[in-house]
Image (tube, rainbow, N blue to C red; front, side):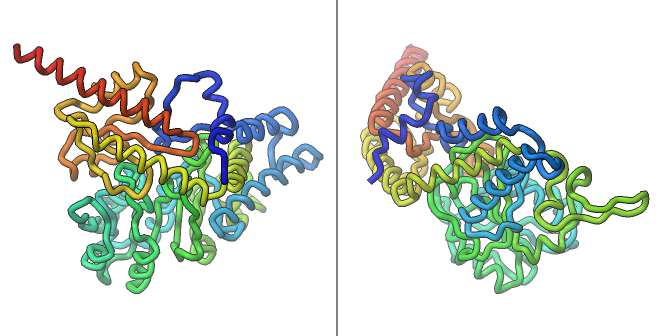
Length: 408
């Protein structure tokens, strides 16, 4: 069994901020020393460009970059050539819309998405549908705000050509029954692209088992650096897609009139890539492997259950997702704007998210201007939860007193 106090000790941010209670991992995770060291190793020891040099340092950098891709491919059970390094999940999901969507979507076709989506999951399709005169439809959510198989079946028909859905809601913490949805979508010959940004940090994701056509995630939510993500695409689909960008290192022979494009995935990675970041992502994959998903799941579940019991004893708040599948608690202090409440938390060293979380459709579905979100990860402890709940009580009391004074 993993000692999570020792895990927490591997995050140097706590050395510099010993009183920090970090509850914003759904936005970005903290970075362990192993990831920071790997990136520093690249810059200090062999920080040169890849693929281009015929000297030893360039060869070493190229080998390390290839190894990082191998690690990511194995991490999601993909083939090496099916993993494209991107800037982040948003970059990957836009790539799918601007390559596959641009070349396959026609007027009258339907793209099926949901109100649970992060903006990066549905906005690229919204704009593409506008250009192509296609139709964007939304899977109805159930009374708890979940995507269900029954409602997906209701929305699916032969006109649906693309399904773009989240694997885990970044606001509600609900896990979508994505494997079953993919099977149903494929029965109607629809292509499925999965936003897995909130999934891969918390549980195993196997693209072959899911049978998804595309799947995107970010490094920075799973202990890796910012500026790096990965897009999985089925080989048979990627081989038919045109490059989105042209330039250095994505081509072989170039003349005044022609260009020969490299094989996948290199044809989709024009220019000097995010080398240090890719190596950091590979190290993050190693870090998750050392902890073990079974331990991550157990630790988060224990903390989440502990936090929910504490929250149920706090009056003056609205908890929107008491049945969340992951350690995401989305709530509001009654009668208080989330940004105002967040300032009180900050004075107590509690870092959590306030606003619409780049998912305004969720706030609209909840009929509120935004929410507060506390999200748990491996470095959090019961002490963190206790301090959070104490600060929450203080915040509720402060605004109740303020409201009472305003009526005097």
